[in-house]
Amino acid sequence: MVDGVAIVRLRGELDLATVHDVRQLLDKARRTQASKVLVCLGGVSFVDAATVGVIVSAWSAARDSGQQLRVEGLVEQPARVFDVLGLRGLLVPPGPSVGTSGRIT
Image 1 (cartoon, rainbow, N blue to C red):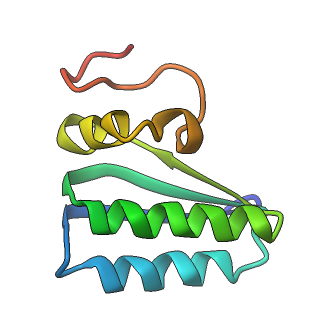
Image 2 (cartoon, helix red, strand yellow; image 1 turned 120 degrees about the vertical axis):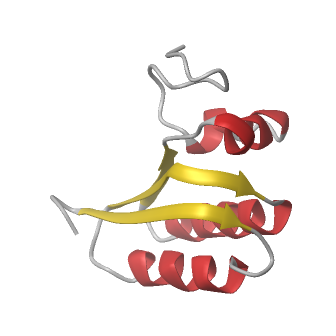
C-alpha cells in the first residue's frame, strides 16, 4: 500500500486460467485499510470477459464498502474490451490515456 492506495499490478494474458488468481488479488487489496484500489493493466496483453467481470465485481464491492477502485494503463486489446463494454468511464479515471494505437488521447 502506498499513500492509502492498494496497488494491484497485473500482466500477461488474463483469462479463465487466471481469473481465480485475479479475484484473490483484488479481494486481498480490498481487505486492506486503503481508501483506493488501483488496478494497473499496462502489462496486460489480453483480457477476457470473465476477468472483466471479476474487476467489475470488485469495483462494486469496493464502492459498497466506501473504497474506490480504478483501472489504469489500458492499451491494445484490453482497452478495446473496456471501451466496447462501456466501462472506461466507470472504472478508468478521467484524463489523458493511452489509446489502442499507443498514442495519448
